[in-house]
Image (cartoon, rainbow, N blue to C red; front, side):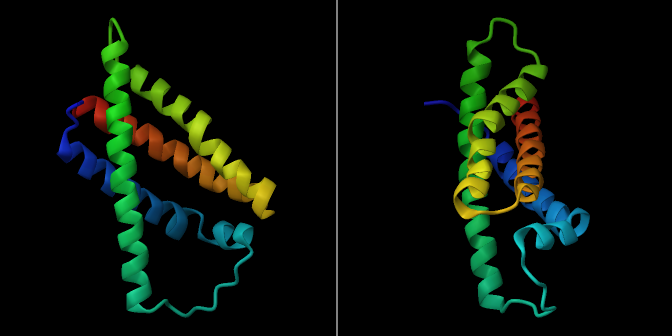
Length: 139
């Protein structure tokens, strides 16, 4: 079994969390609501809903970070001359093969707008590249 640095997993998890906060709350808040076709009522969700949402996200971000770290470790071990740029290549390939098709499915099957794919897909790309660098430099 591959050894993945638990501190790198936790760091990647919180990186995902804070990137998502910045991405969807600060940088692209208006675009997010526009593309998702949701009208902001100004009301905040209840404390229970917020705890459930954050807990669920953190659990799956932790799981995703761990799996990403294992995959990058296997990829690194397969290289004859590992270089940090390979973490970006690995991250891009994972994004292209797994994350992007998932988001394009939202247009195909959920009838969302292409803006959703651009917004969510670009978040996932930055997230994957960041996690790749975290795991590369903190093996």
